[in-house]
Image (cartoon, rainbow, N blue to C red):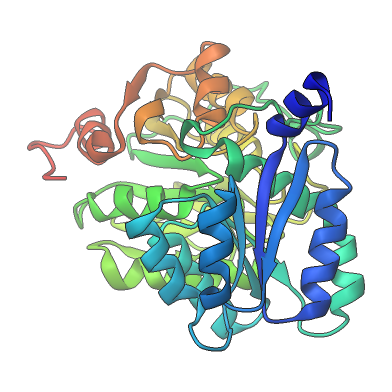
Length: 367
């Protein structure tokens, strides 16, 4: 291997695959090795076998199954994050149990996950090959391990779901908190919501997540937060002390019914390649709530939310972005800052207190 070839090889993202299915290991290796910037340096059928491979190859990313012999994925992930923190992409089945375990994995430090179908796995994984490759790339750049520009120019904007406001907004005094996040967002949203008091303004949240996971995500948040958290159903009144999570595969919008704010769901095409899209939620808040909304953009890859947050700011909303040091991936906050959409950059641990201060709380929130 000559010097230039050696340098090119070193630049590749090194991946170790841990999965008890020989078929899955083969499929993942084929699709990852087909990417010019990724190389699979090892594969193992269980975490015990994986330990020596990881020690000798020092991978940039590990793909990890959940249910495996000798040691399950969660126990291994917990040990890995204590002893040798490494970006991990979980491979989890689309089941109720799979969603619960995956959410626990994200709590333990996994960067992201790929939904593995229980039937038709060969076809399902092949269909998800682009997603798998992209998530491995994102994981490699997480926590400032490696920076890569991965965005694909979006084919649609929020215009595909609802138009920008052209009429004067209805005057109201009720405050709302509008939140968007992606990679790393499950734990960031949890930390933010746990800092909010029971009497906080109503919260609408879009987190990029498949439909099989959002209900479990909302239930987990509801069990640990002082406020009530649920998956949005559409048509419900937005109440103080309540948070509404966009269901996977539907855009979440803020709307009005008389004097009340209500949730609205839309199955319009994906925006910025996402449904739900943060831009769609933020635009609806700009149109409907204007200066009475507070926009928050948290960790995530890509640009979704930047344009919508700018519309919120132009409509009079106060806007905040999570700072780089506390983000898993700084992409979405960075893009919002770059277009001039952000009034304040805040560490995640301080975000709830700052938002409540802007909402007019009469005392600081203990975060």
